[in-house]
Image (tube, rainbow, N blue to C red; front, top):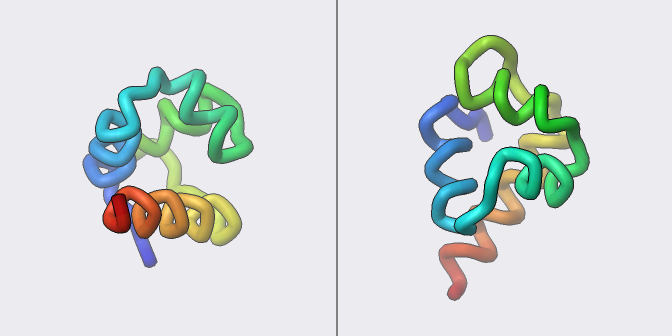
Length: 61
């Protein structure tokens, strides 16, 4: 699943996390999260899979 920059930001905000906290959770750097949210780069497949898992978990709760 491809995540738009806004979807990534919305997921992070729903989790009430800073970009730094979210980066640690996802397993990437703060700079990567910042670039994803600003549309300057796209998450790797591994990161997209982690985002999908987080989104699914959020929808369960």
